[in-house]
Length: 70
Image (cartoon, rainbow, N blue to C red; front, side, top):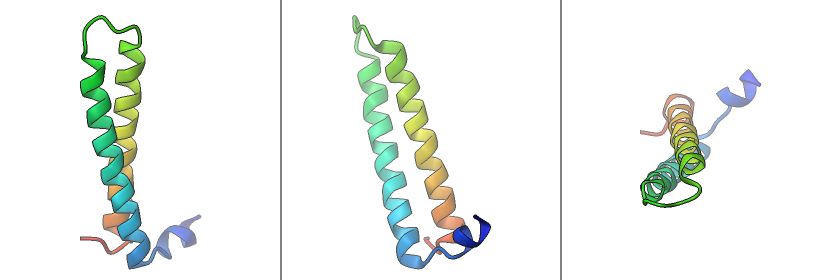
């Protein structure tokens, strides 16, 4: 597993960063949608938005640290 992380190329780092940014955008939109009043799925939407934002942040950290992105 460690060898796989250390073998991330510049192109792979860019793709991981793009996926991270996309998850952040989706999480932000989902968070806004969770604040619409009178929705039945308000709590699960907030949880999904938080998970998407966290996953996007982790992907960006990996891309910047090991993928030579930035």
